[in-house]
Length: 185
Image (cartoon, rainbow, N blue to C red):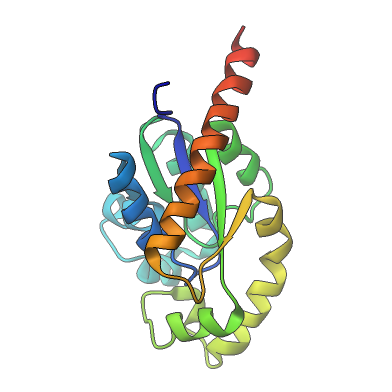
């Protein structure tokens, strides 16, 4: 049986390991890793923090939608999505129509530790980043839980997480291919 080549979209809150896990998974699958935030920065020619400051969050969400709709190949990609990418209405369904979606999850304590002092996260450039994380996490948790198979990343070795993602991906990619083959016929 041939390996599926459907895209894998890793979603979840900031600091859950989407880029780190995505890089390792992409290497194992012989796929390309794309980080939506890095791609948008590259296309805009400026850091996201600068874009947020000048244009605002709503304009950034428009760029995320454009990236998902037509800013990357439709096969053999692992896409590490920005933490808020699936929050706007319709974005989760858009991802699900384009490939397998998995949500990486970590405890608030782990997220706080991993994001502490990171100046490249514009939503945390506030007086009380910990309170901001708790608020955003509370607002987004329901959509993350609907996003797809949830994989816990705290307290686990990277190899364990990667192997878990690969097992789930292989199963869900086959299901995704079957469902989309039926829809196309």
